[in-house]
Length: 105
Image 1 (cartoon, rainbow, N blue to C red):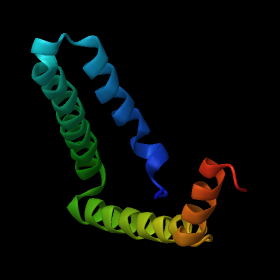
Image 2: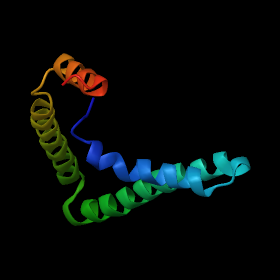
Image 3: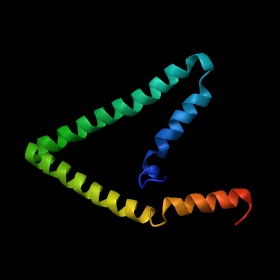
């Protein structure tokens, strides 16, 4: 099943796969922890810096309202993209895929 945000998380998947391939077998856990830590802490750090600047310039109420607006817009975009991606029924896609695999289409 494809979801509308696959393009958004592809970069993280690529980073995880790169870390898996680049690290020796005995360092797989360390490599994955570094990738996760980089994404998590960079996100928290960036959000804190940007949020702090917005609060200083416009106040807490503005940041709260802006966050709510972004969430509503994101939910609307998600709904539109999800609806567009589900135009074909999954059973039809599965049947067509199986027929193609069997060489019967």
